[in-house]
Length: 405
Image (cartoon, rainbow, N blue to C red; front, top):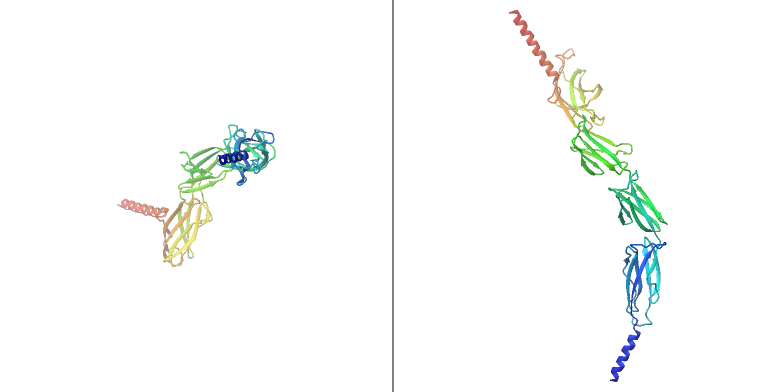
């Protein structure tokens, strides 16, 4: 019985010395003007026991009323080893504040003040109309409201602000040491794209603005409205052909994209011989109001063959859309096959092949005449003239014979 009483005594003594406590803390975070802050990070540092030491709680974030609650528990059994103080750390927008209290003496609501300011961002067009945009301040993203406005709380310092309207982004750095606002202007423009062939006829084509494609109507027209850029990139594709434009929309609100889809025309072939050369002449025209025309970088080429020797010559302009070249031959009698190859600036190609029959008389003249033979792709005028002359001569001879009878 005596031993049992002694054990009970020591148990009671142990209970009297056990120092465990559980405390619920109510904390609010406000700025320098005591305006409550939502989304502030709060932590509490306190003693768990003299063996386990002090710990810091997992962070919590304040609600829309700027508040957060913690429950801290000390499991220390020795009063002399118990630390009843705790520290509250609050941070927001790169700024922080801390304060120390004791379990026996602290306010029912602990208010932490952190320097923070309102930064209001407006997104509008050039006429002041609000735009629905996304605003991002260092990872904190908000969409603008019906007034084109997004409101943020930020700490003192420099902050990167980015706005995004229809994929067009603008970014600035803003220094904040008081409540501030910043306006982002997205000028909006109209743009009409018309796609035509070399004759001005509308083409159904694919048109991209900043790589987003749409299709023209049957008249070759596509209209863009509320374009948020001064100088967008426009790409027009038609049948594998591509053209790019960068119009400056404050001064230019329409584009005509012309595609030359018809090859140049080669006609009016003629040739004559002189001193070992045959001068070949042709009319070459790229027709149409919006024809691409010719480039000096892509000359007209004549490939010809003299007695099995392949040769090449460039044609040069002589005026009125006519071009000439000289084919060299040292033979008194020769057939010279040739091919004229032409292309315009849009890559349309055409060619004309023919045969030149050369007979040189002993006196050095053109015995028998000079008759260029038109190729299958070219002008048949020389052959037609010869045939007409022969037919007309036969008819005249027949008429004389019948008259004599």
